[in-house]
Length: 552
Ligand SMILES: [Zn+2]
Image 1 (cartoon, rainbow, N blue to C red):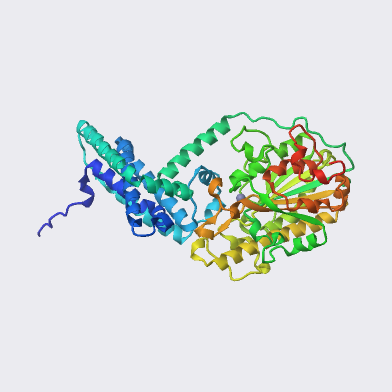
Image 2: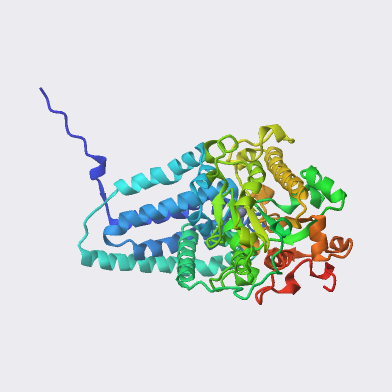
């Protein structure tokens, strides 16, 4: 019997720690920043003969910066784990940048922190798994298996010092050469500055973590403790305000706003009869649910985005003695409904309407009577405000947001990897979901019109959506560079005849308000006005209806 010569175990091969650091920096600067380089190679500044030189200069500059960073950071026992985290950050961010055109900023990180299982599920699929395999698992496994050779710490110290100094010299030499290109690129294409992996994720994590920590540490300030409503009446005739918070519906695809397709047939019929007012120039507070929803209900609006932690509209209404309720059909109310009665639609016994615990928005309308009858009777006599938070057009699975029987536009994009669908299919699926909101609002208004109570229904979407314009999908872009599709939202108001009388509205005055520029900043004060709640926190000047009221 002969013994086979033992083959060298590849895992036993060792590398100088600084060689591994250099390999890590090289991976991050090249493949780890694929979306950045693709974007840079497409901008007008890098076209023409000198273009590739500029791109190469930028690649080298980033490599130099990464060499300095890893040279300074990759110490001791956390070296391997830290490298793995950087590879994962770059790989995951790259996939979402390539698939949806998004960028990584603190706001996007906030969305990630506050997502739920359902939203994560909506992003899963083979393209994501394949990207994670190629961009995270394979390089991550190679990095993890690569063994660093033990080097006496004194020697490693000066070697590492020299490594960092040489890397800094590389950056210092390249920066003046690339500065002009870099400065004009970052000025003309602001989104590029949010695409530099992994610095974008590290920066966003640090800033968002610090912001959220500081916000949570603040004591909650009461708002509207002096709030009051007109004297209680017979509950059967007390006012009711239904606020429907839409999701991801952009003004551009809303039929009532002049979109070429009829995505709002039921609402159009109501508008034609003069029963509702559509506001066609409404700006959202943010480009994500996480920013917009709390902002919509805050008295400070957009100006208070980084302001004090304080109570919101629902608290003020409750202080005034009204019955308040939040019915959610999405990932929660982002803290807005914490101190008022609230429930998820799926918590009602709706086995038929909500298979697998997930309700279509259409399930909300039949729940409204149950919600109304559950409200505190004493408070009901002062008035009620019910918020319905829709699933709306939550993407990227737009095709799941409408019921098969109501789909008017076919074929639809049926994958969440939107960039793999042609635009027509994406828009079809999106528009079908808008029609679902039209259906819900039509059902709600039909139901509310049958009561003699003074009733108002106010619908507004939380933010818009990109549907592939300039390669951009979904929402959540930093406000300063977000396109109008993500910022302009539909808003409409339906009032029952009894409510018009109660508010003493002058004739068809509402029509004069329809084309004015409004924003989420007006919601707090307008809903308070509809509920006839006064408080020092309520600014009548921001109530959209004020000038249409007798004496307004
Ligand atoms: Zn949203």
